[in-house]
Image: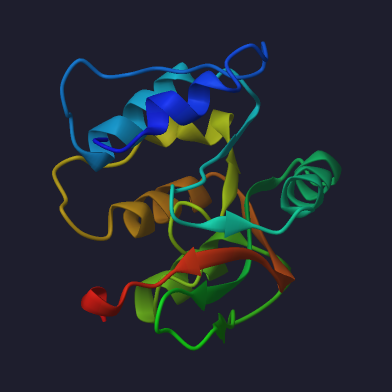
Length: 172
């Protein structure tokens, strides 16, 4: 990153729960995600991309579901697009509650990536036995990984907006 991330994080680095790592050189988005996966020490993995936002209760709701459902490997929710010049739009999901990994995969393959960008889902670190993000892809790297993770167990979709994904006009 060429922004002021290092300056911003310096205000929080005193907190032992916060770790700051800086790559010596730019390794690219997908390789950086994989590096973060390798550094993660928790039972669950939750990304927050720099331009997205969370509902204040997202982590609690996600963790409660994973704690109560050991057969669930991935939890997601509805999202809302926001951004400069963008009318906010809630993006729905094809189903809610617990569904089998097989059904979730089938719907992902036939339709679209309703599980969303890396900011949306949370997943069990143990599901990474299927590997991390595929660096040979330049597109759909998250979508492909969700499919592999769902081969390890069930999915749970919360029927409310808990993540806000920035939509950029130039990417439409």
